[in-house]
Length: 117
Image 1 (cartoon, rainbow, N blue to C red):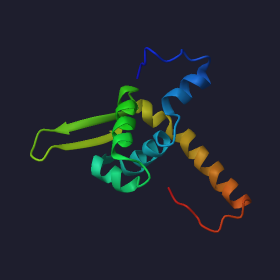
Image 2 (cartoon, rainbow, N blue to C red):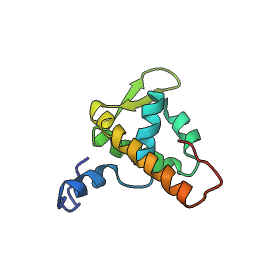
Image 3 (cartoon, rainbow, N blue to C red):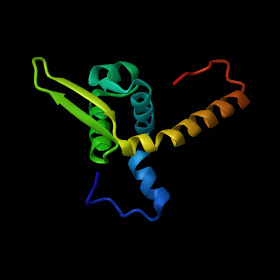
Image 4 (tube, rainbow, N blue to C red):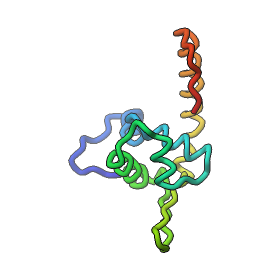
């Protein structure tokens, strides 16, 4: 997604984090990878810590950055599905690496609750 008011990326890392940074984008990409296709309602149930407005905005940004596809079925009630684009799929190995790193850090911190993504 191109924001004309945003500053230009300084380097490739800055560019990447502008597209996938934030609290929810990586998690949404990971869930879409694991489930192939998800509807808005399914995403809303999974992400209980996000407001509907923020979820919609994040999905629009991911779609604008061509990381996810939004497919609208013209039926009543309207049906909308989301899935990863090939560009979004390229990020999965890196997100998986971050997941593995997070698990190791949680073990080091002696976390008693095992979170699963």
